[in-house]
Length: 425
Ligand code: AMP
Ligand code: GLY
Image (cartoon, rainbow, N blue to C red; front, side):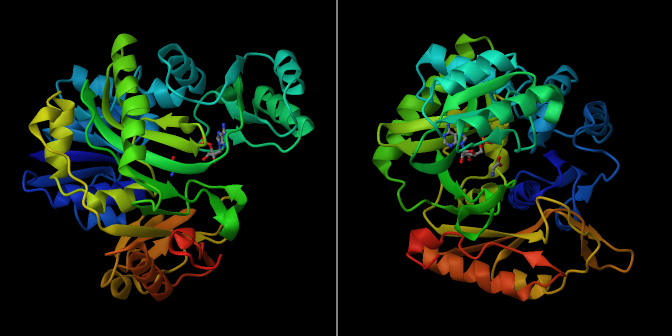
């Protein structure tokens, strides 16, 4: 098969790595790709992931058999719909199914209508009633969310009612553009967070896999939220009982709910959960793989990824057995100093080859120079994944490789998977 991968981040480098190992792929293209992906695929650097007509044109021009979409933005913009209309097979949901991520209010209503466990919430289109609702809640009990896609920055966890009210005013005042004109105020949950992934072909839900993600920029979960600073899989608390609850109460009912709503879900579903004392509850759904969770879960996929994606796209998941192996994986993200605020780019990166001897080094914000070097070009620069028989071994390998890689003002968390192995944090 000839496969076109859409995207350019660390998640997509992990997808490219796994796709390139498939026995069914004879050619891999990436739009636009990155230097790491370029070592495995032919990059189409002039075709941006968000350029829906451009991606459709590239898929037609190159006569690809399957398109695999990494990020959410092109899915929200209808890339899967446009590719299907052009007769091209695509792995990823339609725009109407992608609302499970692109509209938090829609996703919350779906969960409420179908009895899927989630935090209590109310949706508001103007500030005054939202402020009144916040005042009726206990101090620190509200979470404020912009309805639309806000690049992972549309969630505020205020400690006081005043802060909560200001967050509502700022979102409705246009801080996130249209994404904040509708705001969801929800109950704050406590427990342990976990990201769960499964392939869904409309009706069938594959075996699931779980990972933990580190969202804050600094050790000890301090500092602002980022796209993700590290991940590990499998989580130390992930048991068959918990997995069974998540399947029966969340994943399978959600697939059925999407069919009932007239927008069957096809692709990978990402359930961001809080495991509370009352059981697992949904914090959010995403319509794609996580970043950096993909960098720790795809190495565990024992099944051919292209076979899984094609079967998912064709509604015949029963034909493949999705198997996740039990090896432990830890990914540490190396970011540009200053991220998620302002940061420098263009700094040379060294040590990549020696790091790759003992870990998987996935590129995210990198660029190649005319001289053949690699420099930084984004906030999250690399994700380094170590593997092992257990999380301690995987973690040691990841950090050994991270220490071999150098660039100016490199920043990474030193506590990824630390709590799982009893390391001091
Ligand atoms: P999101 O962008 O929806 O992933 O939210 C970012 C982070 O905010 C999540 O990873 C959680 O840590 C936290 N969060 C979101 N909603 C809630 C909630 N209802 N209760 C507690 N924490 C939450
Ligand atoms: N790691 C969080 C996300 O991909 O949304």
